[in-house]
Length: 594
Image (cartoon, rainbow, N blue to C red; front, side, top):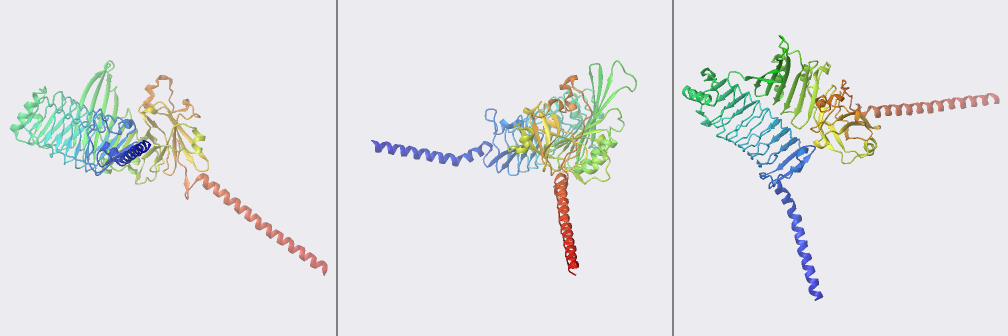
């Protein structure tokens, strides 16, 4: 009986060991299967990277993507070469994502793949994409412009539904299938070019695009679907290269969607002669008339949208008594885009504005650099410029604070990376104890006032975030404390940075008073009248280096060398003095003997 029991125990142990080995062998495959066969994912410093070879799985609400629980921490999505598809609901609801880069190997984007990515500003679609699924970019509220590749064949229903900030769009001739409601409620859309190889513009395509003023239609389009232009009250120009009879039929279809005011002259049987389109809207709020004029200029280098808002008090309509607000939104594809932006600021709609400052928002899709001549051209101007890089970095520059320099470098690299401080040093613990902390590093150097906006995470909202720099031989030096805004970002005010300097951010450091924290003017409404704002002092940072050493180390070395030389000279002088004394002594003895 005992023999049989021993045998059973051994047998059970062998089975368990076999299962354990199988589990160990299959575990990596199971992990990979979460993303897709042959694919892996990693999340570091706010960047989610999908790499490998093969198609991504489709996900559901009950079986979400493996990074779903970390969605709040994702700022940038990088889909690398080798990945062939983006699955359904892959990045649904990643509300803090600002930039998406998709490799040329990706062929399809699934349904709701990026829906509700409300902060998405920069979208780089690979040149190999053939299909965009239903609601793929629905409610991407911050997206201003997207360039669709010439490989595209199919656009699904509601693909860009409720992209409220989308300003201009061009559908390439390669597209042979479009779903309904693709651009419905894109309320900022000013111009659209539809070169798709389709016979009818689908139903509800531009429903509720109330700023749409200019549309270009391919000659193969001969009819307009039901309510395709419903509530497009500003539509004033249709460019059509087809037969006049078809153009007249299209005009009647457009008129049939409640646009009775559009005239026969609105149809031009030619291509647009300029890249610029404009739209004006009028609204009344709280006894104030608001006139909004948006001008969009799109080239191969950039999309630049200039919005001028004029506010007039109905009860006090004194001639010339109005408030003017100017904002420019630019999506730049290359360095020539920067030049076009400067030209727009200097010579465009803003040249006659002298009441309020100009706010410029720039999304950079190409190199993560700011040309030096851009900084030079904006120096001293009443312009606030916010620059979003496609690596997730954001910086703000108050150009009026910039000072003239004799010479700027060719480019400034103002990007930075933030990572968790998993192994705090003794110096760190001495400065802020066990407080949560992060390591911040800049990619380049700069010597002018600017403000990096560092995303920490929404869970940090309301906390204080203290910036330190590590000074070799001295330890951590406190630079500035700010309040983390409601979106989870900490904005610092710096007058210089060094790529060679280690920076550390500590949350709610016990040695720092909350009253010392700077509250961003953008967040002032959340704090009421209790907060008094003074001019913010920009902090000089970056450990100065000389011959590879910090100033502290260099000074210490100089003192050490000086001390060494002083002692050496003293020793030599002492030896010489002693030798002279001995010589005098011997001369005295010889003289006495004589």
